Length: 116
Length: 116
Length: 138
Length: 138
Ligand SMILES: Nc1ncnc2c1ncn2[C@@H]1O[C@H](COP(=O)(O)OP(=O)(O)O)[C@@H](O)[C@H]1O
Ligand SMILES: Nc1ncnc2c1ncn2[C@@H]1O[C@H](COP(=O)(O)OP(=O)(O)O)[C@@H](O)[C@H]1O
Image 1 (cartoon, rainbow over the protein chains, first blue to last red):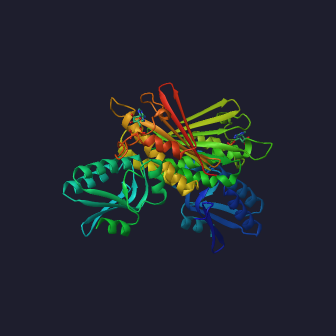
Image 2 (image 1 turned 120 degrees about the horizontal axis):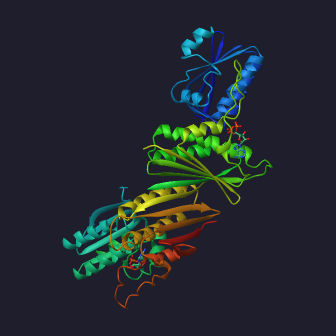
Image 3 (image 1 turned 90 degrees about the vertical axis):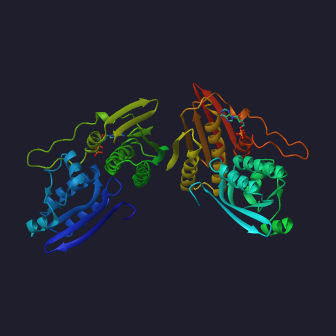
């Protein structure tokens, strides 16, 4: 883990760019998530999958980042989807009233099958 | 170091029984020092040297223990001397006004030479 | 035996990780269940970041105080700042999305806090906002 | 950023090592010089053990509170108990030894405390003794 508590890694699976987040997403590091997604969308990626399997928890700063990035993806005719939204992280999406505001696609394998 | 913060070890050099104290001597463990010295004096030891080289600090509970043991040694015609009373430990003896109340014999070698 | 810790925090988001680390260590020492430690990490992030972002609109460098206490199977969080008067219990509920569209990005922090604690108290005393949050775990 | 810790201590000498460990860790985190950490270990042992031994002569199980704060190059120790009223600043100086004999074993604890701190305050408020000790290190 970096001192910010969040590791952001990038991979590729066919046409899908997979961003893996590990650690926590909060007000001290959500800007890094925005910057990463902003750069990917700006570079022309059309299929981005955010894998949250390694996220311990997130706060409203993460919701803000994901909503901003989803809007930006839409404006650029790109898709931004989430996968591995489980356990406590799922509870937090639910508390935020946001389970229906994102494309949430089950496990990573399920998500890749759907996006490919 | 034990959880009590004080290690008590026993050795022998000729006629002198050397007790080495390592750690801190305070209100939570001074009773162990009294018990050790009490047992040694009770068993007939006539020359006991307490080496304080490894003592990080001591509190008034240590003074109490040493004064009680010195009195007991005297009643049993035994000698109780201290060595390696230096640095901060010496300062504390001085603050306690007790530098003259004990037989303090410099280094362990000097002490053994004097006691043998 | 360690009962509470007190932190001084600057109005700078860069101080947030130190709050996280202090609570993680203290919560573990106090044997607070891991899920409760995490819930309060979220709460601390929301409450502290709001103060950092909104309490001193005129800017400048300011400090505020966080006290964390564990007692009788509950965690008590007290946050004291001398920024502008603000009662977070009165924050409006988040704006709902219009059908078929996404909701606005902000305005969810205090909404989360409300759901994550068992008590949410606020008092303005003198020039200070005092927020007191209680979460039970036993 | 960690500014103070608060400990609850039982009237049992077996609680002293936990005070030691808490102050050792907190003092190191606060970068208090090692010699100052040690001096206050002595002070804490004296003050806490006196409360444990003398504050509740009727016995029974009681708690008292120790707060340790580091601020502006000084350590502040506050100790609060609800035992019998006792102002430790009034403890007599230790009894001197008669020439050629040893002094009595007890009565040196508060004498050490006086020499190891820069300020020694006491207040009786309500049913509580509040001792406040300050030691500067910068
Ligand atoms: N400490 C504070 N001082 C002043 N205003 C605040 C404070 N905390 C929150 N607010 C106000 O309440 C609103 C809602 O806060 P919150 O639910 O955390 O969402 P967000 O910070 O995403 O807007 C903020 O936008 C701000 O206007
Ligand atoms: N908290 C307290 N409540 C009541 N009496 C106390 C308290 N602390 C100290 N005393 C009294 O002050 C005396 C001196 O204390 P001290 O200097 O620590 O030496 P000692 O504990 O070795 O007697 C004690 O013997 C006791 O009678």
